[in-house]
Image 1: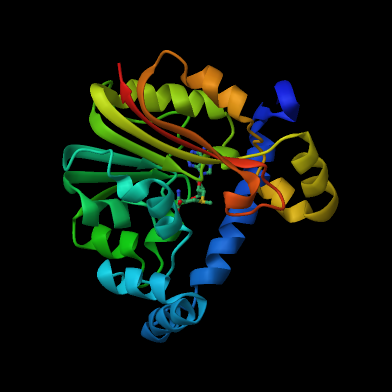
Image 2: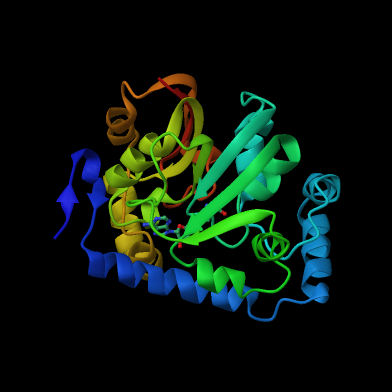
Length: 264
Ligand SMILES: C[S@@+](CC[C@H](N)C(=O)[O-])C[C@H]1O[C@@H](n2cnc3c(N)ncnc32)[C@H](O)[C@@H]1O
């Protein structure tokens, strides 16, 4: 059963659909990380140099000597180096952090006393060699949790920063995640939220041309749906919808939602 909203949006799915998506997700990360080695890290730099000198120098500048990156530098750039955020946070949380995380970059730009990361596939990610998350967890520098955004195991008003980039199209219930994120943020705390957007035409294309992608991304969000979900909860510091051609995957997404808000 799907709950459908305007523009073909799918805001929540049943648990089985979410589990099917997570099977897809798990397979992607295993194939990308099961043979991690120093050679792989070196290859990341070689590939970056071939792609663009800018990206190569970003890896050097951020001392990113770890395996993998899931567009985390891209999010940094479109969030303008997270310049709108204060320079210091006490307790930060990344929801749906993935194996590579955005905290890996943000924590180089901002001083963060305590970093917490939650993901349903955390146990898998911690088993990967040479990933920032696994290395930091082993050193006791990041607190990690296996869990879902729909039910965060933290008390109200715990964090002064929550980050959630490229996650909500993977979850079971997008609005439940947004409600939980708002609950665990302190008043005055910052929410950084980046999300690919889909409309009816994108859904048709995904369904016809990219079956795996369609199953792996069960939630389909339109910017108007997100506007409604976030309305009245935050003082907006940044709210942009990037056009299709400025996004990460213009074939299947008409836009990208960028939001930085302060909990009212
Ligand atoms: C495409 S990855 C992005 C990872 C990370 N945010 C990044 O930008 O590198 C999506 C992540 O969302 C996680 N995820 C799926 N369902 C979730 C849920 N219900 N709550 C929180 N995270 C979820 C997946 O396990 C996966 O790690």
